[in-house]
Image (tube, rainbow, N blue to C red; front, side):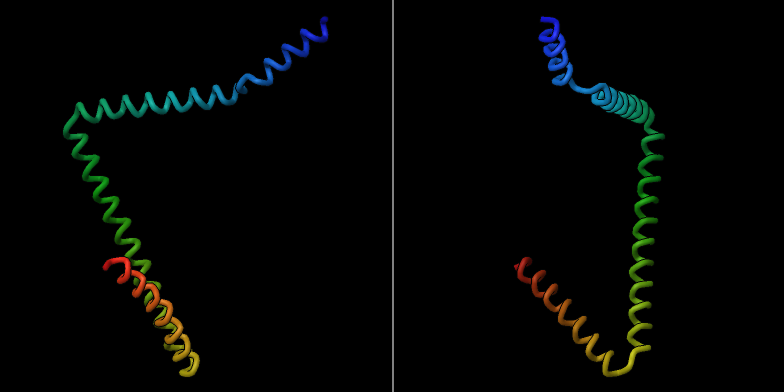
Length: 113
């Protein structure tokens, strides 16, 4: 009888969620409450809301400039690579490169029309 009760209690505890799950759920609830509180405070202050919008715009512009610079560096690196290779390899590489992008461009055109 005692073994049956012990086994029954073990089975009940096995089916219950772990305390880690409860802690994780509580953390999510706390994060939601903090977000809600911050939104309320931001919405109460139009100047703060405007400042946040300006900072976000500056951030996005900075990221765009970063990606533009990376693209320009890749272009220059490719140009240097093409200029420093022997003519026979250069012609083959350019042909392969054009074939790859030709397929991509054709696919884009097909999807557009």
